[in-house]
Amino acid sequence: MVAMLTAVPDQTYEVCLALVRARLESGDIATATAELDQWEATEATDWRIVWHRGLAALTSGDTDAALECFDEIYDLLPGEAAPKLALAASLECGGDPASAGELYRLVWRTDPNYPSAGFGLARTLMAKGDFDGAIATVESVPETSNHHVSARLAAVRIRVHAAAATSGREYLATAGQRLEELDLEPERKAHFEIQVLDAARALVSAHNGAPTDLRVLDCPLEERPLRRALETQYRTLARLTPDKRSRRDLVTRANQIRPLTWF
Image (cartoon, rainbow, N blue to C red; front, side):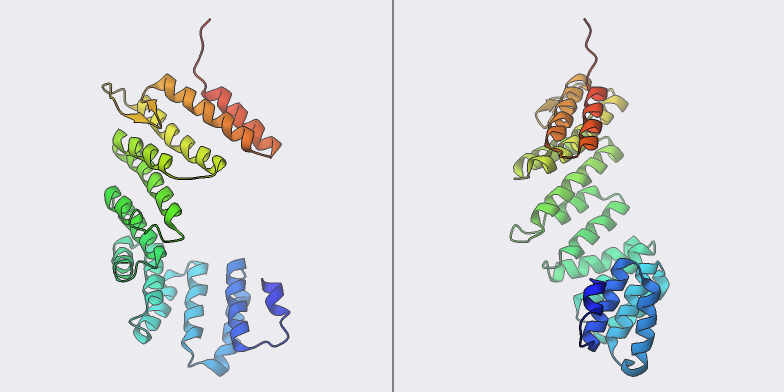
């Protein structure tokens, strides 16, 4: 993208700002900042200079500078969602998920067309251990959204984390049910089923609790059945993987996880 933009014959202000963003995405923060310095000499009153300085600061990890820039933009554009999201991201990266969560929540409640606000809110809820709130947030992404499937998969991952943190087997049972409801390509589905099954096996291994009727992906919560299910999924994934080394690694994992057979 950088090469494409530098090759544009008419280097307008808008093209140069796009070039700054491209440089930031490629990690060339120094050049992007130097170009902003040059433009500031003639465009100092343009709020987009401050916005891009905020992006540069956030990219470099200087969250204090980013907050200062985005706070200035927020004062200029108080009704816009973008400054709120930028402030929230800066607060989250700066280690203040509670304050970030309030801004994410404000945007998400006002306009659900900003899925990044929903995902951000879910992350901040997870940070304080509110797994159910995080799940409810991502599952509120409407079916009409392009991010609907990603949101459902995020809910599956949150349930896996919740099960590990709380030893809650119900989280994994529901995660399996949600996966079965999704129309995923086989390779992607196998990856997620492995995550859920492996979390169930780890939970069973760590906590030899009372028997339960709960099943995860139609598999009883017992060591041997879970190992067999994992072996099957690793071999399925190996068949779907074109890379020979990755396929070999997956077959090795399948052999390692398979339950011992006594003759």
